[in-house]
Image 1 (cartoon, rainbow, N blue to C red):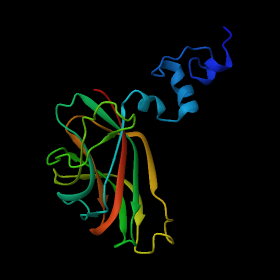
Image 2 (tube, rainbow, N blue to C red):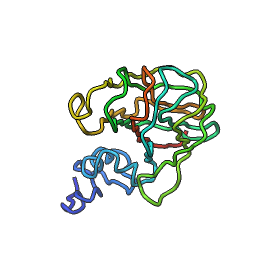
Image 3 (cartoon, rainbow, N blue to C red):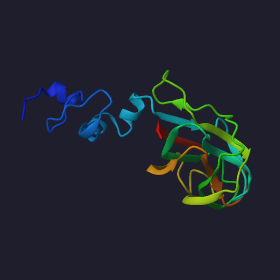
Image 4 (tube, helix red, strand yellow):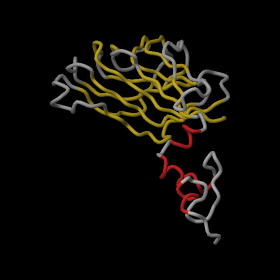
Length: 203
């Protein structure tokens, strides 16, 4: 195997097995580059990674209501992209207003207007195809992934003071025309702040 300098290895220009890694971190250098720079660094560097959150605490609708509020991520029809959902995060900004289950539901993209602007994780890079909203009239949703629970205790006693993060690692992929939305078993007053992290790739 050719000999490479420590600097080349540290910069991710060559993997430990001698494979040359291009600037996008392709082929067998991907895992090595991610280990050095962070799990999502290659996607962020390439301008494929995006995030969005509620800008204020939001009230949520109960269960599978089609007049829905929370946080939703939509891949609009005709986008020619796939949206790979990487993480979902949530936090209570006040004492929990109700008790119930928290999860994610899937639905058609009907009704999403894009009230919240996605941010590229490589600041200043291109925009997202996704529509992100905190309320819409949606198509019939289906609960696809229970995530956690919420309750009425103080946020410093029953679940800790910090945000909670569910690493989805690509378990949910939205083709054009589909959405993923927050689910709460019961309706809540304005208390939750939600966030999504996702990657966009050609379909």
